[in-house]
Amino acid sequence: MKKLVVMISGNGSNLQAIIDAIAEGYLKAEIVLVVSNRKEAYGLVRAEKAGIPTLYFPLKPYKDAGKDRHAYDTDLAEKIAPYNPDLIVLAGWMHIFSPAFLDHFPRKVINLHPALPNFFIGTNAIQRAYEAYRQGLIDETGCMVHYVIPEVDRGEVIGTVVVPMYPEDRLEDVEERMHDAEHKLLVMCIINTLYGRENH
Ligand code: GRF
Image 1: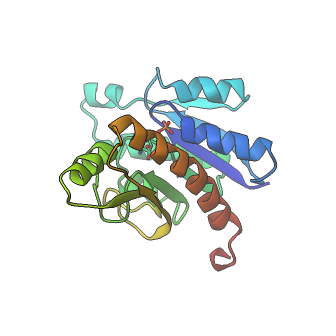
Image 2: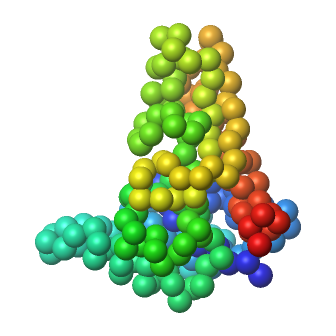
């Protein structure tokens, strides 16, 4: 069975989409660990309900001890490595990884970004896309899944999907449409990455 580690920071609706796809037999994989950097992340509750082991691993103690990101990334990689993941899925994970983490898992870390490639890099991407649409600067937005490299929201693209916006949309409408699109795209990209011929 292919092993997934899923990393979250919040609600975990994308984690839920993976859990559901596995339960339905659509995605043949097992989530061996869910990692959160935030204790109150609802995704941890979702993982526990599904019987998945969890790891809460906050950055703050490192900062308080005057340690740098390199130390955090190295220790986190060492915690995850024994699980032997085939793929590490960043599903709303809010930290940027340095090579101290990524070098442990070459071509095994993928990220979901709620915008199309090269658009709205970083946080609040949906809101920024909505505002750009209202200003007539763009016609559509979308989401993407890509391999993770040290540069934020960059790296080889695995899949994208367009999310349309309409004149009557409120921000909440675009957010909802985006999340629906993300849930589907993420599961499909995990399947492509795990089972696609070009990856073997
Ligand atoms: C998603 O929009 C993802 O693209 C972004 O953070 C959000 C996480 O949502 N990076 P959830 O925690 O999976 O519900």
